Structures are given as structure tokens and as C-alpha cells.
Amino acid sequence: MTFSTGARIIGLALFVLAPLPAPGQAPPAGAVMLTPAELKWQPLPAPAGAKFSDLVGGRTQPGFYVERVQFPAQFTHYPHSHPEARTYTVISGTLYVGFGDKFEQAKLKALPPGSFWTEPANVNHFLMTKDKPVIFQITGTGPSGTTFVDPAHDPRKK
Image (cartoon, rainbow, N blue to C red; front, side, top):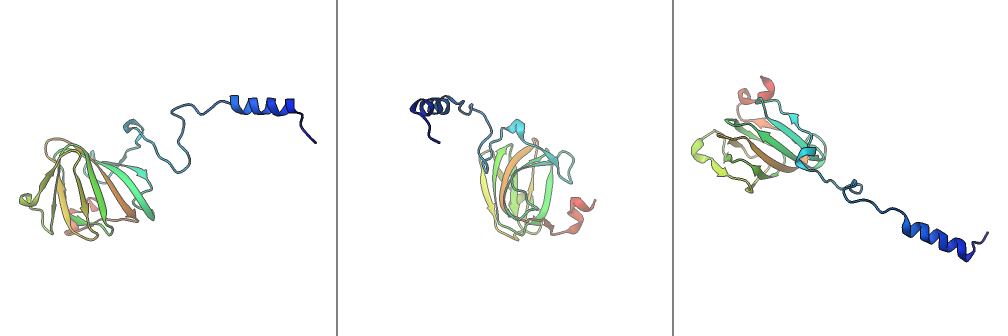
């Protein structure tokens, strides 16, 4: 079966005039685009008000992940480590971070919005917030976990 020149022109016209994707439509497969309002926050085991939102993958799954974490004001996260190397970026608030087996305020460094730091795998660290809540972003390769230097500080066991 052959198509006449007229049929080909009509077909081409329909193709050219077909609606193009409107701006703001879903990104292509494999892409992620989220506004802050679109984040799906889930509670962390402790403290009250601590939350996380998986952006790409998830820390409990194998492979690359990106997540956002919110810690409330006046929060202390006692010395602990993770089995994978991680990178962090502070989005809002000021986070105070230190390294070692014992929580020591003298070792804390204030990291305001825009700050970045890395944590090698299995290196003990601690952090705290002061008067304001903090949001930061973590990237790593899962599956991940958290091991507290002192198991009594593990909020999952309370």
C-alpha cells in the first residue's frame, strides 16, 4: 500500500502540529525534580520533630542515595558512625559538628547554610543544633546504618 503525496503532507502536518509537552510536566524517566513543598517528610526515631525525606534512592537500599534531614532546635546527636562515606550540605539553620568518640562542645564547628563537609566510613562524629532547627542534605551509598559509641544513646532503643 502506498500513500499519496496528499496523505503524507497531512500526516506530516499532524505530526508537526501535535501538542508539545507543556512546561512543568513530569521529567523524563530517571530524572527527579522536587520543590521543597513536594518533599515527603517521614519521622526519624528520635527526637520528636526530627524528619527525613528520600530524594533519590534510600539509605536502607543498595546504591546511591540523597536525603534531606530536619533536626529540631536544641537537639544533640551523640557520637556515632556510618558504614559508608557520606557528604553533607547545610540547607538552613546552623549545624554544629565534631569528630571523636566522646561528645565535646569544644570540638564542634558551626556550619551555617551553604556549608559542606564529608565523613569517612566508620568515623565517629557528633552534632547538635542550638536555638533554631536545621535542614541538611546527605549523599551516600547504601545500605547504610548508624552505630552509636554508647548504645544507651541510640534513640531506636528507647
